[in-house]
Length: 297
Image (tube, rainbow, N blue to C red):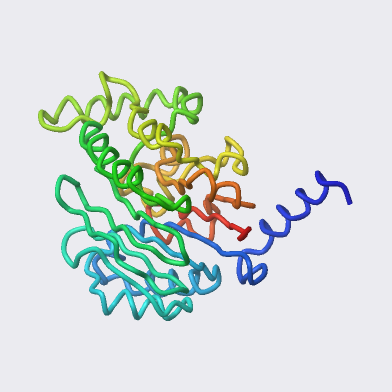
């Protein structure tokens, strides 16, 4: 079996295995913005559907954003349903981020100062993990948050680290896709014109500087080798039909704002990544989850 065929075979195995462990030396990472914590816990139907979905996926490390209405105890209860004994939430007010893991979690830092929603830095399975949820409203704020996070990364002594979550930012690698979204750009221009304090667009156009700050310190977007341009979107999901936009507008205005970024060493261990933007997740949240499978050297 030649190397090219072996690589194709391994990738196919990972893409078709949407649940369970490939082997003892592999691990699965998922990040998911769960949209206001299922309406601050009131939407019990959607919450249960999410729990069933997560149990089927069997993540080993699960990063979550918008844990609205969650407590540490509630996150721990949810984590048990997908087989995790370890969980940690950043805070119990506002829009928390959190993480659960199959392995013990060591808290490195909870960061709220100078950040819109905050950032959680932990160590689990020998990997430094930064769970982020950047500003949804202002590119300058996102840049400030990115610099806070990358300063933490530059201080690391380990070569194994991940930054993942809802960045609310566009990648320069998607610029050709975003250039076609003229009606969405016009919509953002109107929003910025009505907001004196915050600006999502940079000088009236899409901003790519936030993600560039992360790429400048060597972080790599693990989805790029595996996700075709036509599938490169994580927001908005059909759950927002007639809430944010019509069904046709949502399909036309898809963009990618959720990412799994890995250190150079860890990115070499990524054997498959996918934005899970199929019908099974379309009603669970306004975002789609992102998944990456890694092997240990």
